[in-house]
Length: 184
Image (cartoon, rainbow, N blue to C red):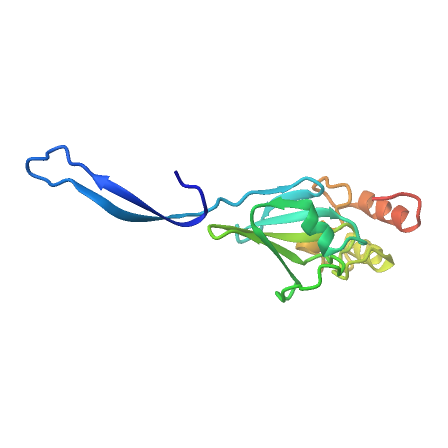
């Protein structure tokens, strides 16, 4: 029985059907590498799988609030893998007490497989980790066709209703949250 991950060595035997022409061999040592299948469970946040223009699959973790820290995200992920967090530029994040910013990555891996998530802070469409008037203005300019530089996870951060469409309803909700009339 395989009881642990990694390399397991077992003794085995070979008994041929035709023992007249073939020898029985016993005591052979066989090493089998057992790898663990990656298991990930994220219930607190919304995960969304999308395909980009190059047909690559991207998975977002959305629903993160601007006051959350990396440790909060790590604690919300149940996995048998190792979780490592990265800045947008690819630098590994050592301080898990720092704030989450849109565009950060969480990579979860076992020896056998890995998966990468892009973190999305609700409303944070410029990647500074905060939701404020700058984000509201950036969405307003995008919707008015003044600026079209919102894309990927930064555009997805504006989808506060999580309904596949970013429009004036999202802008209004963001304005109401910013003015203290509602919460995300």
